[in-house]
Image (tube, rainbow, N blue to C red; front, side, top):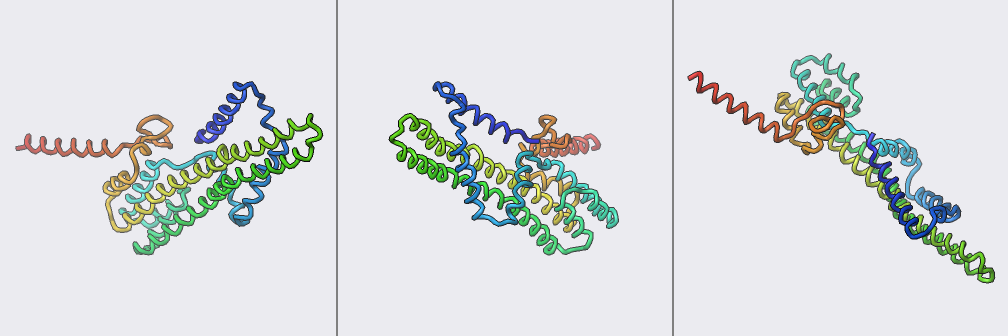
Length: 291
């Protein structure tokens, strides 16, 4: 699980609370129920008009995916595709089809099925690109919904402020009540801005970034499947796929530098180039000695 989303929200609210306390205020003054109802309820309500029921049903799943931040390490994807290349070059369709049942990646499963069915490169590319684009549309519809709420929230907060100020003007004859009513008016604006910039926009941005990273992994699968179909050997395929991934993503992992998210080691492009130069020097040295 990637904790940055939770840590970011906690740090944002902590900064706000520290500011209030340093100015001699009280945190409880920020939590007035009436303006919070119009901001949260109104924002969610108006955003429903800009989406569909089908898209809305997908929100909980994508939101929890964003909270967990769970993505496969690129090195693990490359390793799986390279292993498929070895099996495909062995010529055993039964072994290749068996891998479709073992993998948890739907795109890899489609790629294996397409290769086993003998699809030509154009048909295979169309199949995998269609599945890749469908996933992107599924995720981005949720990101766009959160972005819409980020746009609506400040305006809804102003609506709450105007409504509260109207109530203030109606009660000028009771000055002892005006303080609380004016505070409630400004709290509505505060929560409109706060929810937009502490919740909705950051969540939308996180989902969009995770979508980009997932699409990058899926591109590795598409490129790998087409290379396997065209008969590229596994070593050349591995080098080609590594070249598609930035080094910081290959070396980022739980176990520290050089390990992927599944605990396996990975090499950067510089390390692979260095290894190639070393092997060439070794080969030259060996030739001279033999002479």
